[in-house]
Length: 185
Image (cartoon, rainbow, N blue to C red; front, side, top):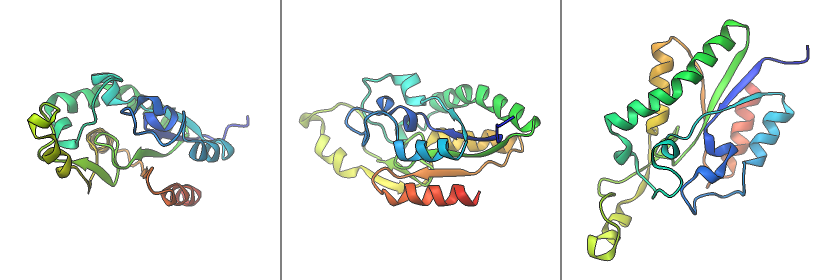
């Protein structure tokens, strides 16, 4: 038996950039550097669902954390994660190691260390609706996205201690740092 029983969970867009809001992807399909490392090191890879796609679809506008911070979206995040929770439990029960969950910093859903925020983002798009003022208020802040928060809560409620890692696509060094962290893990 050649399997090494190491598994990592990836936020959806790491394997499928097509799930991102139009214009936000910095690669063509999948994040090759991270995937190549994981494959070369023998990780089993589980792709998490994208909660934004499963609610809003592909033609959505970009959102901020405040827009997604609703009981409805949080409930959706919980519901789509439960099948993965059951997989995690079963793998652990059978001697597998869940080495971590990798998120995307800046995402209002899947940010681990940083998320996109604005107290003014929302409403209609257009000059007559104050879009310039809304754009100026957009910022990246320290904090987690809604899906990551809900995953953390579910794991805690189930006494599962799984590390979270992040990629900041605008900072290439985070991929190198992630690889170093995984080597130590």
